[in-house]
Image: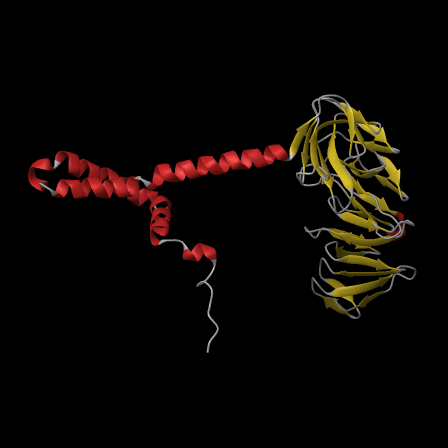
Length: 313
């Protein structure tokens, strides 16, 4: 014997037919609403020639119209329920208090990830607040994966030796990111600053590295930077990936600007450095290995000798 099957599919597929009819009625409102109006009009003004059929017209208009107030009532109930659930995840401080290791002023609105209030998602500051030596404003957001806070500096400040520009965190280009100890992990420079042997222009977005991950330096769209190791200038808008000991590892850019190394025009979209060997692709046709190579040809440059050879991409 075959085992008995419990149910005939997912729960939402076992709903009654009239439910799906009501859903279709609301979904295709641009058809059903005019139809209900026409039926109601016919039933009201067509009494003399419709006879008993006028009640059928009224009934059809009612059937088409009823799902709309029902849907509105359901929407209202769901909104009220969502508001109640959201309120359980929020708390407003009545007095100054330390939450998640941050000294917060009264009036701070905290949003938690759970009803037990054990994990903070974000904090809305009531005014400009001094936290770990930073004058912050607006909303602080906690990244549970990277264990860092992101927020908005109220004004230009020197923090941990970095001249950080004020601004909100938009597309990860502005704003400030710091860890639980108040150490800056990312900020946009508000003034020229020397770091890892490079003189970085204002507007550079600096992301801190460590022994396990490199630094990322996103140059502004209006200024490049001299790279002594390559005896050249990196174009504006590229990202420099630099090891913690100051070694340049990669140059990346979605725009594919041209960077000239030892006289060779290279595409910065795919540029990496291994020891004293540069690997990239030609940004322009160039004479390599006894022949003129087309754009996109993979090349390898030996920095000490300046020799260029074709390599795999």
